[in-house]
View 1: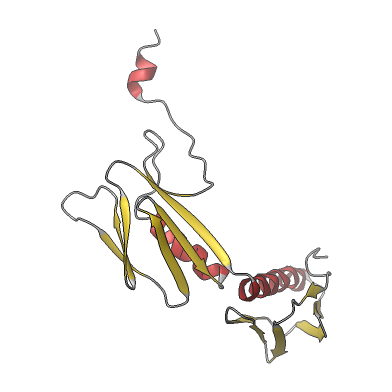
View 2: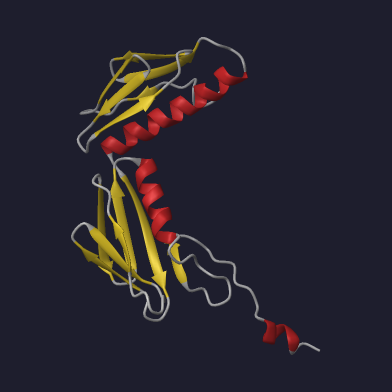
Length: 184
């Protein structure tokens, strides 16, 4: 039994949830999202709460029960409060420059200059400092995917700690060859 799926999900004020034909529509003050669900899952909306129920009691039914409930909670949280990811850029000469609908990442690519990345329509990206990027949006999947694509431009490396990393990410540092070779 899914622990998330059996609990009723509260709907905050100003948010509406409706379900029909395998799609849950969630509308709030930040935007609207759609969550798909299979035919063996029932969505019951009762005033200020939503209940996710399953009609099929096999492995697939149990799996989708928790998944649909979790996706619905993420959608409700997103259209109500939104999601934020912060990235920091570490390295000499590494920086981000925001320009309209694109963001330019200077991350030590000799001969290529900056990597230009276009910003998706539903996201708000700010650069409060040259070594910091803040991504805001109401779709958790889109915010996470865009942050991961920015991070993949120059992943943090373990020897010097340079690269693009999440704000709360801990990089496990490695000792170089010369430090190990002197211990005889």
